[in-house]
Length: 136
Image 1 (cartoon, rainbow, N blue to C red):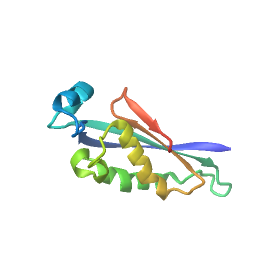
Image 2: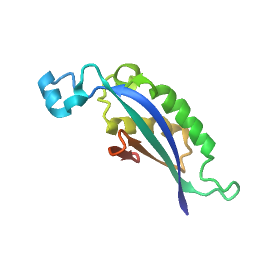
Image 3: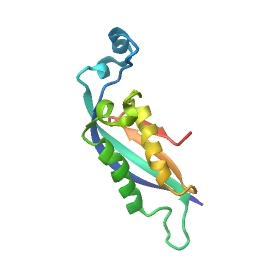
Image 4: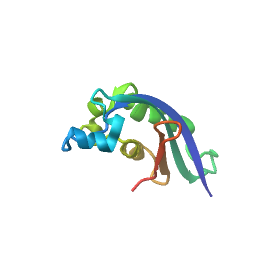
């Protein structure tokens, strides 16, 4: 029987949505105020969910402290109070949309989890705008 275990975390980060190969006018038309050359910020809410079978010895799918520590080490330290475009290597050539951020978070966490567990990332950019990624 598969059970989903989730941990919520938060980070604050700035970004700018734009493509350097497009004109300012085209970036403005597509990304609107998110194309601000001086960047803008969000208070992101992250929910990392792990799916798997309950271990008969521990009663856990995963020890939630392990998940908490992984999120802190690989996501919060890397993203919190950062300019995603400038400070996070994954976004040097990748537009930091909520979709891309969720995929990058998944890719940063997945290698640290046992292969028998599935990972889902839900990222809230605002209380009403969020994306979910479960892997490729």
